[in-house]
Image 1 (cartoon, rainbow, N blue to C red):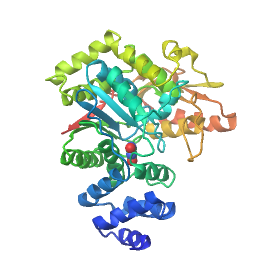
Image 2: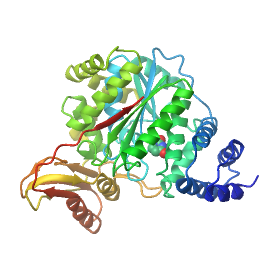
Image 3: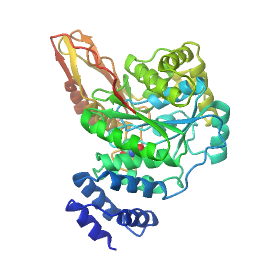
Image 4: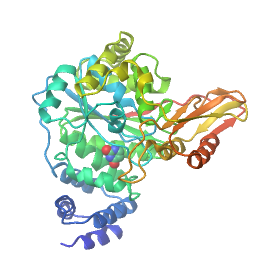
Length: 435
Ligand code: URA
């Protein structure tokens, strides 16, 4: 079998056999198939797609490319959650401690930023001292004691995804239903949880630009999970505008701290309550969604969710002084406010523009080796549906880049606020639940 023949086959829109898919993945992981051939195959898949059988085989080949975790020594039903990526998506940082405080067990492997989207690991690492690389034993102990841990994918777990994910990020091959489904589900299945909630983001700031595509991706992933006896559900969530107000690593951690202390932005809290209630029901902690939601609201009110977050950060080596006093986070040198030129209502706010702008300000990676500036990003003061007065603050940019970089970005950010005269409704955050 020759890899080049398989690339041509897929390029011409033909189906790959199970054997051919396994040949590609095992050869790539062993280093026998080079990056450039794997990239070409991924690009062929972006254009030609895969059928459900091919996606299931690709997921299985990736899942078995390394070790899988056995979480049976952990108490209770283990729940996991995964977002397909977005702008300002700090949900896991808030939701993990919330569901843990309500009695669920969350053993979560997260990822890094991909394309214009941020990654939970990068956000967590903006807290000085935090490590996301902890040993299996320490991971199990932490989850047993605190109820939650958010760590990086170890080298031995789904190595195929580790290599492919990094390659896709820099070869324009992220936006593909088969590749996203296999990437997400191979990781979720390998990391051993009993129940999985998938947050499939939809809109300009997500990889799925419309509800039809997102629904298709969600159904494929839910089917893969169910076939392997995992209680798998999905929510479709709105990512046409950023989630919450902060975009950028330490800025988002500060917003997550606010949220855990009961001062979170409405859309972020709604997603956490709705998704969290489904997770608690999946984990058999509560019989109804209504009871689960009430419990989540209570752990925010009584400070127990915040307390779990503090414990999780401490267990992972973080300096909790930054959590207790978020003003300690290092500030970017340039803080640039952007004001409205006209009065009206915000009609549109393009999440992709905000995500790319935050990345260019230093908050994300443009190439594999880029080092992220944890203090860089954007804080929005207005979101879709908000009323704006002339001269009012729309957003603030945070960066350490020179004026030649941030001035054009400031212009782009200002222009992405589309202001109209008619009243505009606030956007719903959960669009659909798929079971
Ligand atoms: N999240 C993942 O884990 N993989 C993808 O391909 C996209 C989002």
